[in-house]
Image (tube, rainbow, N blue to C red; front, side, top):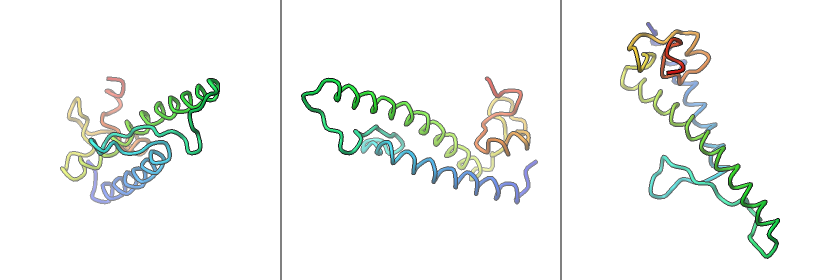
Length: 122
């Protein structure tokens, strides 16, 4: 069972990670105006499409790399946001599959963990 001090500690860690993730996301993309929880890649500053096919291919490749990174960061941000919501709702630290308590060492390794060790791969 998590204590109030545990919840305060994990909330602080999650909020710090949220700020870091949002900073990283804003360096690679921008929020989708139609869906604030979605991020879209932006063309790197100074890169303009032109007549040179190789330069254009490089720009497209960079944007694809940014999109892959955005997807990974966005997924992690969603996990962090979900964990913060669970703290608010009083369900933080409970495995989404079994309903049992998530082990403390698992939460310390990954404060946004949605499942216990037994269901990590589920």
